[in-house]
Image (cartoon, rainbow, N blue to C red; front, side):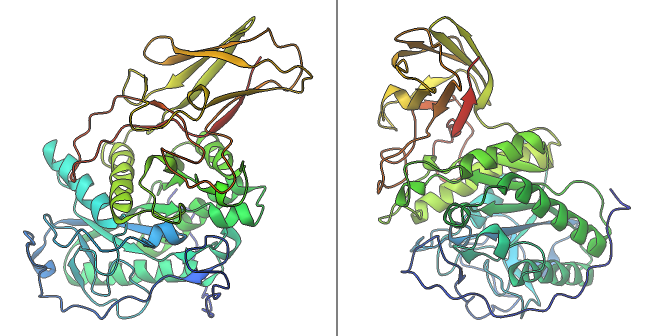
Length: 431
């Protein structure tokens, strides 16, 4: 990929689109909160066990965050991660770094809100050190609430701000004699594209990843894949009972392997009072989920697969779904998640007389069987999961579009969460 990058054209920055809906909406763009004043480089956060940024030696790996309001921690108050236990860094302007005043690195902590950034970086470091390695990180975020892809892609101000952060980081790293690279992009998006009725999001996500990778490689001289990590949009019931967006996100994961990576569905996290944005605990929890996928792909140079269907077969009225399971065996959890009906599964076809699901059962460590009331004969047979929600319901494991299927992951959490992998939203053909 070293020959792909070309010189980055100058991008003229213009004013960000102002939000015209009520605060907390994911439908119309608004600028992320302005960063607080910069801290001096030599100031450590209370409880920080890491040395000052000027004394760090070795390598610093930069992860750039983008997306909508969930990427910026909207509603995640008060901040929880007030100390930095490792050597992870942010710009002096904060996690939500902006594009100016990017002159120093300081210990990574949260200020006004809890984003996913601190827990993400600290969980990566925790797991890497436990395995005998090291992976010091720089995290910076620029997000625009409610912005669909068309307002975030290359050629827009948000994209240019992210690249400005890369330029500044590389310069500071050089001055500090640090090896520097950009290892990943993280995003939390989908709401704006649902409202925008985007019908080509899978291709858009692939384009986004390609553009970032190409431009960053031209700036830094690095080579190799810079993956885009995302989570499936789960809060569409604010607007509609169903959404094509999480299905498009999953399709991008399948069609662009190793480049666009679905970490898992967002219904697994803790939502706040509006049912659209997360709590401070929810953002910290989400960061740890991204960390596991990142460590698998970037640190271990492996492949991340969320809990998702691998094959669907049918024998008469019996449908069997075999899954890719990160940590078998599969479990139907009715303690952490309410049962929305049939444990989250739905069957549909072009009827009349569409059969109903009469039972759902585990069939070994990686498979689920569904028994229908009759053998299906109509066309367009589909098996769906966490697909239909109740209009107006809050997202999450208790309400909204969700299910009860998870794996048995016991990865230790930096903050005491259970990190089970919950099944993705899906809609698959039945033979």
